[in-house]
Amino acid sequence: MKGKTIIVTGASSGIGLASCAIFAQAGAKVVMAARSIEKLQETAEDFKKRYSNPCILPVKCDVSNEADCKGLIEAAVREFGGIDVLVNNAGISMRAWFKDLDLDVERELMNVNFWGTVYCTKYALPWLLQSKGQVVGVISIAGYIGLPGRTGYSASKFAIRGFLNTLRIEHLHDGLNVMIFAPGYIATNIRKSALLADGSKQGSTPRKEEKMMTAEQAGKILLRSLEKRKSEVVLTALGKLTIFVSTRFPRLADKLIDKFIAKEG
Image (cartoon, rainbow, N blue to C red):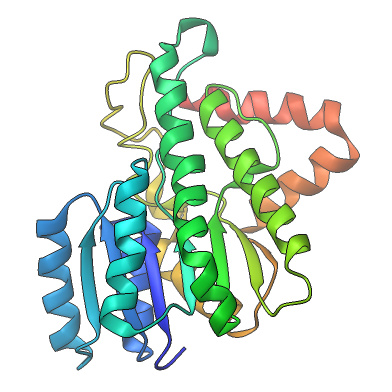
């Protein structure tokens, strides 16, 4: 990835932040996108010093806003002359049964997770085709199997997977690589910022984060997967087992998932 221009959305925390650090260390030109520009600017200056890499560009971007996504791509091209990799990582989660849910929460999940991926990919695509580059969608095990209390989250991740799988087939013959990157449970802030039924944030995590794969580990796997131009990557043994069971024993999978997710209250 040395010398490649990589855009990462949701770059202010979690897998996005960890991946940016790993890409910067590898010598890539990194475009960090998130809503919190102050945090991004501080992080960018830190990366420049720590990794002796001057090619770090922070860009304020709300991926649910189409104009922001277009502006992000334009800023990357203006600064670095093109795009080699787009990592659609920005996303939010939720914790609420559908019967109790304010529908605005569903809309926000789709706007950020799904439409954010669509907007950024649409405006980056001409440049990615030119460079024979790669587009990545960071989804979740929830993009393969429905998880209770996460109707909007699962729906948005299923939608991203369907969108990118279709995009892959449309571009089988012109050098574009499309990757589905599906973490299992990763130690990030996504559970703390998950939206509840009324749209407020959960604020805490019911899981033992210290036992999970770290964001840094996930970022290293992402880098290796980009280098190998993989099309699908599922992280953690639990994630792989969940998909295996759900495709072969769907009724059993439903019962196991119900029991497992019930731990979160």
